[in-house]
Image 1: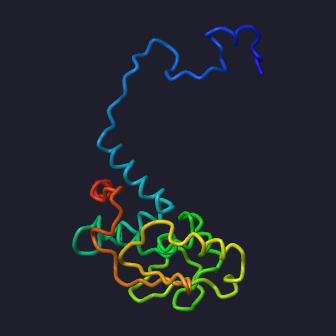
Image 2: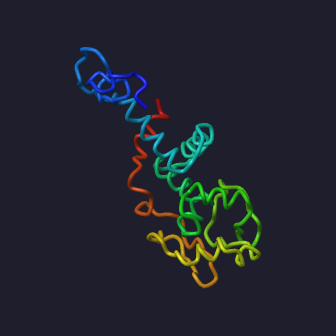
Length: 190
């Protein structure tokens, strides 16, 4: 738009983005503190599963109450959330979409409408679509893309019926590798 006139044709153009802030400040990166490292790991887990701080803190409190490794209890609990299971079964393209499907009542657990995304699935639970939704075009498009990604070994999927079943609880090797649960535990232990 060149609102600054001739100045935009020079190197001093205000519209041009620069990588460094103005001034004679050295361009070195600051080291991230230990607290910053822990905070980023916690925020990564929160954003991955789409949780608010108070809800995440509640999961952490329950993980501290259990005996054993706290971080593994936390990740197992997060993996067993209904919206995450719907995503892992391939019923949705993202966790946000899975959360919306659950919220709007499209998902059944053991044949009962469950519209709570934080519902903790148990071994033997059968997750399926609402029967009326199986006639809709969105459902038919979702069926074509199954399976999109590798299925966790603790879940099984019947593509013909579009139902999934929780066959076991997530084992340590089934938990996400990108989240360091030890750093999250240390963050909440301070």
